[in-house]
Image (cartoon, rainbow over all chains, first blue to last red; front, side):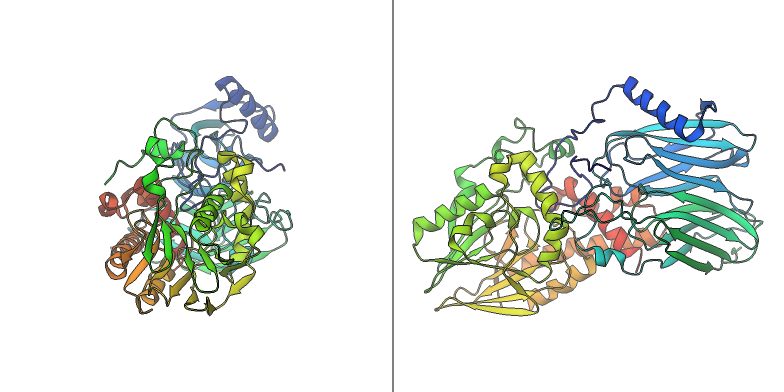
Length: 271
Length: 310
């Protein structure tokens, strides 16, 4: 993977916010070039399946210009949630564009999904909703950010690895019979493989969560296949089907063989 | 408050020459001021790095002792460091024995190479080396993009790493160093000069220019307490006027940091998502700081990432 020397708006350079326009390929591409790139990516993921545009099945809420390219909050809403089987999230101009594939199970309430991602360039982001009847529907938004994948994260890899695998889950106050909003937080550096150590000129090897399985009782809430575009210390917001019962179990694994499991008790809704 | 550049100007700052005419090497900004006996400082403007200002945006200067000169800080680029060296040589021909780098940020570190011929002792926090490993080359590339590689400078490592505390004796005055816990960054070093009584805070204290959080918010608030207990009444902050009363300046700083912490905690507790928090937290501070719009949202992001794991 070639490091892209764009300016990292994401990284606090403190007194020198070395600001400037992104100059890597992608920032000044024409709409036609962007469309062609998306066609290519879509073909690599979905083959020859037809993807139709949608204004209703999935909507993307992302900042037009990211404050921190290494942590761009994304909210996906799926108003016709009963039709939704899976969501594919793609950041077209990232070095590894296919950021996440989330597949919902019966214990999920797939009306909303929140992710935090890295954005390496001025880019279109795509959310593709896969419906239960096998259809694919895409929504897109343009995001201005750069350097999110290659910007150094902290000041110490060791520090970034601290507590790797720790998890928390927060639950918004729910009402009986209504879906419960949950937030899963995982300690993990999610090294992109593009963050360079200056002395050795080596890149910190990519180490990222590639599989996340969330279950409740004997039912799946969702599975997520992730990649280097997910921000460090991943935070994922999702909904729980109110019919679900039992504790939540989260199993996470990374591309270097790390594996972690935690259980969480869903609070009973107050009246 | 002076007209702060808009977000767009700030983001394009490196290349938007027309918008920031006052940020160049105006004589006023770059005069050396003798802030204490044998202590000379240059005030850095509240700006971002541009091709015109050589990233000369931090307060930098030097202390002249009986046995030699101590530089604190080195400048924001090789060009800035060279300028500082020439200012030193206008005033004294004593050997330049020490160069202090208060933390990893480029506006404080990148002048260091300008003093290579003096073979000084480069003083830094014990965490500075690792921070430079992680960030140095990245900063150098960014700076070279803006200033050109020949003006940007190179990464210089400390030769004296301070853990806890250290002292340097210039013969007639002593410089007492404190290596702080993670605060503004992971490698903040402060210095107390017994000759003038001045406390050199680095960016643990920023006056007028919004503080930028790149370390640990709770740690920073804790370290401000330590700064108060060092026996100094006057300080040389990393940004802002080159000499200030310590107590009120710290009080402004902790008001901002405290507001940032309190309101971010509330946002986390209320499940307010990070994208909403950046637009609402600490807005009461907006008119009190220059470059607020450039840095506050990022400070909130940093604070949120830290505090959501409390």
